[in-house]
Length: 216
Image: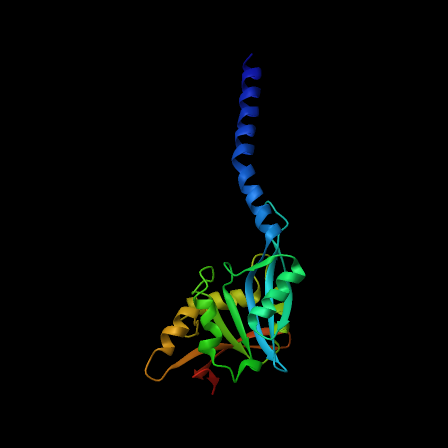
């Protein structure tokens, strides 16, 4: 009798858990089917055309929370056009709500960075705590190498960004800090530089200073 009662309680517990977890699973599946979620992005400009690289989640619903990632690429006359191309290719809209790292390439050296980054500030889903880097190396190569040399949960550039946050002698300029710095009298802001050497992404520990959007 006791075993029968316990068996029914056990089955009831399983039923309750299934009812509780089903909406969560359906929600995650809905997001996976409708959105391409960027955890990092890179922007460059080549021959007058913007190139956007996105480190995107590939949902596999791993019970341990480990998700695959891949680099997706879009090109266009504007950054919005490049991101729209990624959306069309993936068959999903691009979500920036989880983007925590942005890399600006050397092709943007003559851009006004305030104008370039302003749309991201006013995008409600985009985090102002996103860390900005600059590189004179290939943005796409850095982002792919970041995945290849990172761990199961984060790419190498995410690890560098977090390291910079924790160590004061290194620089971790966020989108919010960049704009607050640009409002100073000299209208300058600095970001850390990333580079590649012997297939290793290096945190240079030096700064690129932007004056009215121009790299000096």
